[in-house]
Amino acid sequence: MAMFIAQGIKSVRMDDIARQLSISKRTLYEMFGDKEELLYQCIVRHAKSTEQERAKRFKQADNYLEVMLICLREMADKATVANRIRENLRKFYPKVAEKLSNEFESRSIEQLRQWIELCIDQGLFMPKTDIDISLAILYNTANGVFSNRNVWLPEGVAPTQVLISAMIIYIRGMSTVRGVEIINDFCNRHFDNKPFKQTLE
Image (cartoon, rainbow, N blue to C red; front, side, top):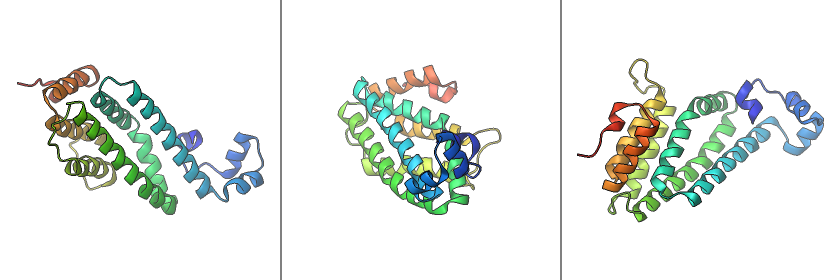
């Protein structure tokens, strides 16, 4: 996975991988069948590793809203690499891209649902928050910003900045007074954008 990220999916050959692993190319093909299957397994394993790290944070967290914001920030930090991988997959390995998209979509939505439910339970989101509508807005906003090339962006503004702003503005609207205080504190510590530094009147 490190090779795919550093060099680009298309540039990494099975010969390169076999050499890096100190095994024969034949052994590599016996294990995975072809590069598409190897690529698929690499990305799935990478995603599971990320999910396990997030699960550890949830167990240690005082509140789930801050964990949600940390994950959002990490997603934004890694967006450039993730988008490059996604574009490479669509262009050179469309079957792998479609398979991963179908699998990750349901998992991403389920994780978002879990976050929202936990934040409601902790009194950080309004108790009457419509979870399904919130899921649709949050997921489609992220998907739209990163997947739609026709999205208008102001000059000099990166998609990640738009995504973070949109997500935090919506999450703030769902939040209780305590939730807004956590968001404001997090944004004051991690972001320079003035809209994030507004306090609740």
